[in-house]
Length: 257
Image (cartoon, rainbow, N blue to C red; front, side, top):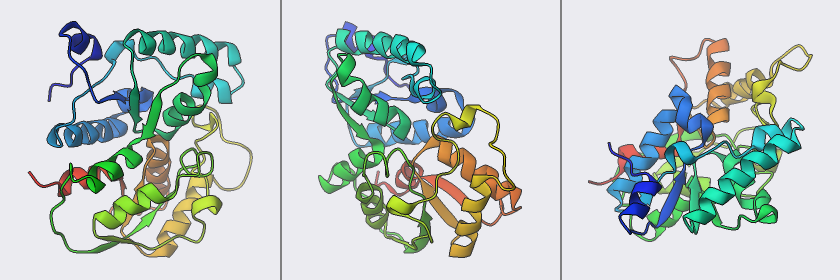
């Protein structure tokens, strides 16, 4: 699959509907790369004109700011803003809620103001508008894990649930969900540091809730959550019983040609 770079599109004098912000995980982590590919396939099938920045995309600076390195955050943010403004980018879609939060809420004060959507919000819009049509499938029951940076930080709980219902899936809510959802343990820069002292990792406690919920599928919308959930499942030796999916992976399987 050939994914266009924005630099190439600009050279050709063409416009795009959206810029797909891939993010560090979506670019370099093998599991998250599958989500990036699924989302790009959806955009292509739906006839959306899009592009990525490619090598011009830097880390948003989210992990640096959460870890207390404000200087590094601002260096990265200003580099990205200069690139985005140079191309006159208007609309950005992210598959990572950390990138989504930083671009949407923290870049404007540095001179970067754009319409920023998480991919679950954008996909919900595309289905509602009829640009994505889904096959008729049998109903399934799934667990849904709210990511902190989409849910608690940005108060977005309904778009992912709407998508799951559009896929003819029923949600069996876990003991802790929505504003009371349990963190996977990776947010706030925790993904890149040693565990905090304690007798149990957070992702193992979260997986105990998934197991207690009695579904074979858990749906998430964040590359860090997916990694933490999968690691928790392995720690409980449930990797052959419970599968973790990003919503885009479920949609690409069920799209009409």
